[in-house]
Image (tube, rainbow, N blue to C red; front, side, top):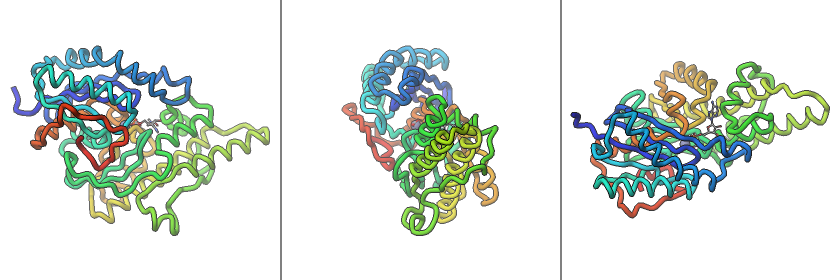
Length: 348
Ligand code: KG4
Ligand code: ZN
């Protein structure tokens, strides 16, 4: 037996039905059922399709997680669930399931923020978070720089994207290049054979007054448009498109801006630990460049393994276990979902 809280976490904010079980800071199981294949032909996640898939996957995924971890539901100390931000219908499936479990088992319920969970998951990978930690969250829906004095109740936003999220830019550029959805991993792979200085794509909000006014904000929509124009010009001229070079040059523009601003934030806020999370943190070039620039700046870099960067239940369980360990009050059983939950609100 252990004194550390045993917590089951449920994640359904987008197209992944994730169920994870964590004991304290130890990950026992991370079970994910994805409906991504059902969305591929639409080129984006279809909310209604995602909600239905969550409904079908929820009970089998919970059962599989418990079986694989050798855990009985009655042994759990708490249930945690993503209550926002995300797709409204998809969130409802997770929150309703978590409430049913909490009520039936008589266990406390924690409704937590998806984005804070992307930060907290690194605790099960690399141990306790230094306080404060600088966190850069880059996913399909969000790009944010966060100063995190305490992931259970103090998350401060330094800046975020003004338009497309980093992952969204990857997905849109992939489409322009004729690569499948979701595009991030495909662009990453194509870029390996390309020249990252072949094309000088724009770095949004990094110079002059833009930079002054939006020091820690991001903008990727101009970059996306520049790539689309460049490709279109080649098509019009009847020339073939060097997919690997475009992918590598686009990717370089994104990760250059991300790492530059993240390290500037570390320097200006005197923080020596940088954590990168969210689906785009799985990007191999982002990981490599961040490693290089952090080493140069004397900043310790933490990036969870790729499987824990994309959406999963372990991250929600990891944050839930922190909430229990730090003695935070559980959420009300009337807990609502909040599809646009602000990043600074850790718990609903
Ligand atoms: O965090 P996540 O799984 O879901 C959201 O909360 O949005 O992030 C998904 C995003 C997608 O846009 C996907 O294309 C991107 O992460 N992504 C990547 C890579 N793997 C996933 N982007 C760049 N390179 C990757 N290797
Ligand atoms: Zn996410």
